[in-house]
Length: 175
Image (cartoon, rainbow, N blue to C red; front, side):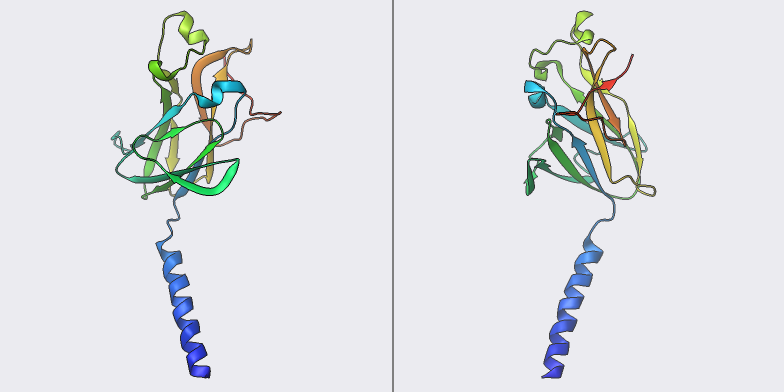
């Protein structure tokens, strides 16, 4: 009987140990906290480049997402990687250095006015966030950018620091 228990324990331990080896230690969560009103439905699309400038959004990463209000329900992306307000993207990365940026094309801006639109319609883009799997952050945040007057600038901000919150996440202030 002891041999059977030991054998079952060894099989279970081996399976658990094998699963932990398969787990990718370079998992990153990219979170876009909820914003006010319908702005949550304005998508920002993720672009991931390797250290040579190659777009690897579809080749070197595996991505899933979940809603902050419905945790532990994993959804798979079908084609493009994107974030709506309240979404968390989970990325499994191969070892290396990456550059993350997000953008919203003109036809996906849902009629939201911003200071960038005053000079003519433009793609809303973010800063470039550099990420190294050798010195990894666990979570990075995507937030909209506003000017000193509180108007959306037509830009996104990616940072390893969480935005300020009141009832919703507050936009990054940038002149």
